[in-house]
Image (tube, rainbow, N blue to C red; front, side, top):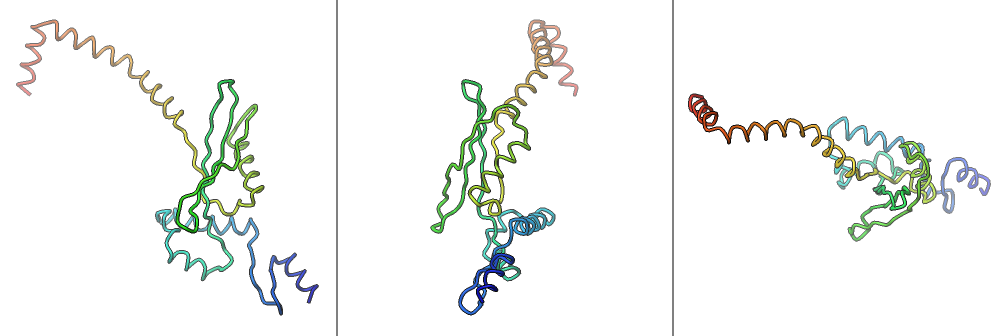
Length: 192
């Protein structure tokens, strides 16, 4: 039975107890990811709220369908910033709810980016970090803060409005300085 036990553990990822009773079987990261993607597709395509995965009935259903599937329970945030020396950094923080229903969060890593930091390079760094902590199949999502991009959009939008605003101010000053124009506008307003 030692050979069978070793074979089942190495080749089929089965952990055995006593007289070949199956205790647990973990899915490979690939199968775990495929099942998670199938759940995400179901949530998105049927317009379900993501909160559905928190419901006990959902957990019961998943356990009945596949007792070895582990519902991802971790969320990540990524915060990007540039130091005063113009060095680029990223901090990855993990968030989860513990057994006492308290929100916990810890910084997993802070690393510096030198050179190009494209989405692909960032994704590789984050995935490697998840592998180091052996949590790549337990993460449900990653959120980033793009406040700086929103600020750039607002500044750009305000620049587009500069010329029309200047013209409008000039028109208002002209109207306010001329009693005749002001009277004509009041007459037009009463007609409408």
